[in-house]
Length: 391
Image (cartoon, rainbow, N blue to C red; front, side, top):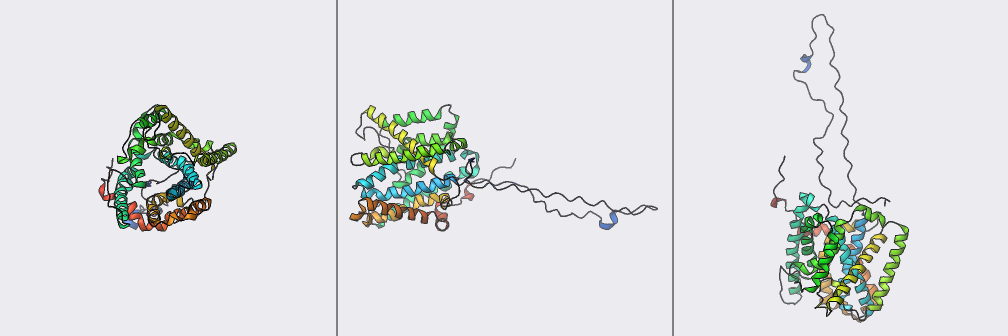
């Protein structure tokens, strides 16, 4: 989601109404053989042969572009790595990787979500997904994780309006997509979104309904919303790829340098300036710098990820399953102390956790995983909606 020309990814192709198929069969005429009876003295006239209708050419199916699927798989694997590193953040190596990942992985996910939401309201099927793949899975996952925590000996806790852990993304994406028509009507949506993002830091925004993340990552969604396919084409140039590689190396080096002393709160894109113990001008500076760093890394990753078909392109089509399910083994590993082994708190542990999480991401993005959990995470609720009226 490779050709030199980039075409927008088609996530869920719509049905094409092709009309009745033309089989080329000749329909019998009324009266059969006696219809063409010659007049007296005339030679029998054979009926004119029916003209064979030309078969209608079938519209070629639009092939899914693998480019964004490649990006999505890389990002979802980093999500799993980031969540698994939490118990080992006392080690500088693990903390460095954690800061590096959190600077851009969710911002880029949100940016791609914005890009794929450009035509969201033009399709009834996609509009139905607001319930099918957001609200219903959200409730199911909330209850499921509450039950899992309770089975591990923790106190029963279920607050539907305050999403637990990784479930915040479903609610935030729901509200971002609901706000899409407003942004598309604005003349300058990106500057407005950035201004809202910066001024939101002056208030302690509640985590209810993921409102803190909604405002904290809003610019990335709106930037994705205004992006066009030609913007991705611009990144497919050698000099941009070289600059992008240098940018990623430099960001990794900075993460290593600041890891021992840097607080983690800013990298979650949700805390107020007061909660981060920052003055108003320092808060604005930190948020502005983080936005610029996040965008730079987003662009760098987009430039470097392969555009053609790869071994993980198909896996990138099922990232929802990895996102919602990876918390189960990670939560169990944390509870059982498997991530607290001393040798994991160091460079060797960083590599071990990273490779293990990539393997877990592969398993959770397999088609077999979708087959098992599709009825929960992608329920077909066609009975819930009215059929579109025929005009």
